[in-house]
Amino acid sequence: MKYFLSLSTMLFSLTIFAAIDLENAKQSGEINFLAVGRPAMIKIKGSAPAPVTKAQIDNNKMSVESSLVLNDLDTGIGLRDEHMKEKFLQVKEFPTAFLKIENITLPNGFEAKPLSIKDQPFEGKLTLHGREQKIAGTFSLSESLELIAKFSIKLTDFGIEIPSYLGVNVADTVVIDTKFTLSKKNN
Image 1 (cartoon, helix red, strand yellow):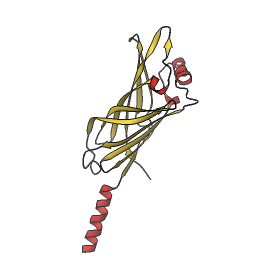
Image 2: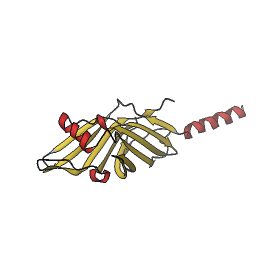
Image 3: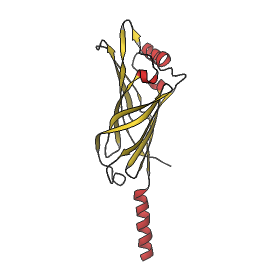
Image 4: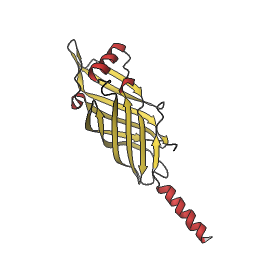
């Protein structure tokens, strides 16, 4: 009996401290961007299905890897989308954006019972247009593992030409936000 109790306690402990692998279904959520023009009356909004995301929680630390197919971006205007994808993002040469975030500190006990986290800072590395740059933003994570994140990028940091048409320029800074739900990965 003593052996059984020791074994079950050990197995229970291993279960609690085992890494948790998470992912999102591509149908879950979306990613949005906002680029403001100069003059500021022009606002270009776009969206795409949520990025394919894998996350791992281990010892109250979370790491995240996401990839977004840039051809999925849509502003609602076909000609603008064509120019954005072909001339500026050059999706034939650079079809995917990658985001990697490591060592997000989670509250103690999060692995056993997820808790809500609001507007916590994160840092990561974004690869876009063939260039990797550090980014910083904020994220929130609900008890049901709904993830909301927001960050900004400068197009010129990634070697992307600033779009301009008839004297109206898009600002260098683009705001990106995403919302989707993570679930335990089926191995």
